[in-house]
Length: 109
Length: 112
Image 1 (cartoon, rainbow over the protein chains, first blue to last red):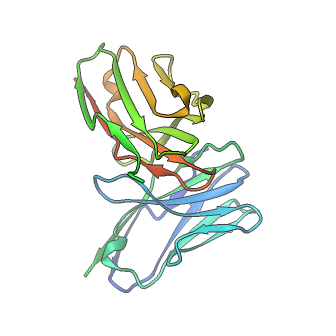
Image 2: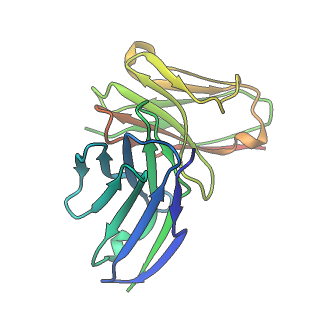
Image 3: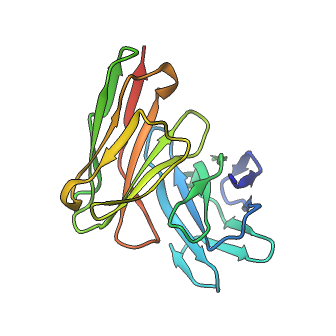
């Protein structure tokens, strides 16, 4: 039931773009994206709800394919501050988020 | 708004001992969640409160784990008869809605 994230790790140069994917085998009500920097707590980035509603930061974009139970997080013109581990979390209508194993993103200057 | 706080930040205990962690959510957040996180993994759901009611508890959670949220304010997570496999970061999060969760800094437990 744990969502599968890909890739496991990404190395980018500052200014490059990245896409992080999240896939679930369960029907989903919402997909949540968080970023965690080393030694810190996870920080909310975005939630995508069944039906198309989205809530999150203006500089982050993501998509949610309800039929395929997949979501993608798009990071454009990456900055050094984007480095960290990105977690997707899936929720199936029970308010319980199941997180994936994460995608480690490292941005080089 | 001072954020979610957790105490203690670090706890070292011997196998077999009981430990208790405290979480103070952001005031007026009626939802409170406990997670466990090990190295290289995402947060693993443990349990969830809406106000003082415990609405969900992970089936992965053994009977040695118990959580309370008296009066819908702070919450405690107790682990009885700790085992080395309990070593992890224990995260608390609170939320005013089913949407974004605000995580605390966590309590790192080491069982020796």
